[in-house]
Length: 113
Length: 111
Image (tube, rainbow over the protein chains, first blue to last red):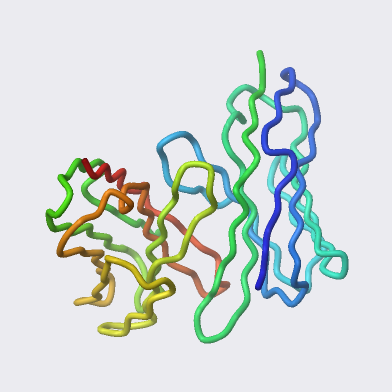
């Protein structure tokens, strides 16, 4: 059974700092890995999708890496801003006729002005 | 572009009452559709998924059911709500790249 762990559970940083969020998964036979952002009381917003054959993806100040063999992914946020404050979730999927996705509980990020 | 709608946004229902939550997707055809529940401090739990009209699979035995009467419509139902059904319900669909997109969610409180 796939398990996804995100560390730390919560993080508070001053504005402008670069930061790294970690995600680990137990079964390396994944199809893809997706990072999401969730604001309080809202749905999930997709940030980055990394296919199993890829090593990293970048979007603006965000960079996500994937190391399947070690079961790890990191989300790097450069020059953090107060608007980045949210919960960040990692999700891994396997393919089998439909996309079975396992989510981590998330890292709650607070960026202090 | 694709858009996913959910309603209602919030719902307060007494124990034993029925439930109907609706999800619709615009801008795509024949999507895979999913219902998730998110409880405080826990990860998202997959409840149901559908690969086509009338095709529903359940991940977890529970007090809920799902239906897909149209290609882009997904409905979550219950005949009698339990206190444990409270939570944040999210509908999602997947693209051809198997990228998941989520709706805004429904906050359900069972009293």
